[in-house]
Image (cartoon, rainbow, N blue to C red):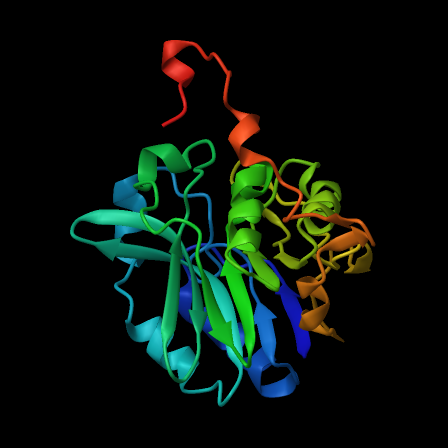
Length: 264
C-alpha cells in the first residue's frame, strides 16, 4: 500500500486557498492513503468559539463533497472543524467514495478547551482494502491509551493529523508504534500562526519502532510503500505476544487515586 502525508502551512481563515493547494497535491501525487494536518482547511490558532464558528461546517458538507469528487479509489484523511447541534468539534475525517469516517478529538490542547466540545466518538477503526485504519489527532499522542485502544480494535495503520508545537511527539510515536506493533502516520504542519510555532517533522513509523521516513520543516509530500499486514504480527519473541501476554485485570486493581483523578 502506498501511504504518505502532505506537510504544509494552511492559510489561516482561507479555506479556498487551502482547498486549492490540497487539490493540486491530489492531482499530482500517486497514493492509496494520504494524511493531512489537523484543521488543515481552516488553520488552527482561533482565539474563541465565535471566531471559528463561521469557518466550521457540517459533515458531509461542501469541503468533504468537493474533495471526495477528486479521490477515485483513494482515501484522504484530514482535519476539519465540524459544527453539530451548536457544538464545535475538532475532527479527523477519512474520505472515501463509499463512506466518511469521523473521529472527534478526545484530548483537547490548551485553548482548544475553550472552543471545542470534547469528542464523543471514542477510538474505533474502519476497513479499507482489507486492512483496518484508526484515527487520532495531535495531543492524543501523549495518552498511550489512545493508540493502544486503536491497536486492540485491530488497527493496522493509525493516521495522526497534527498541529504539533511541543518537541516530544515525534520520538514518542516511535514507542507508540513499537508497543502496539502498528504503522503510524503523523502528518504535522509547519509555519507560525499567532502564538504558535509548529514543529513539522512529519513521519511514518513502523511496527518494530523504525522511522521509515521523517522530514524537516519544509512543505513536502512524501509517499512510501508499506505492507500493513506486518502490524498483525504481535510477537516480539517466539514466546512473547504483546497482546496475549497482557494482564489488564492487574493493572489498576489496587490503584488509589485522589477523588478528582479517579478512573471512570
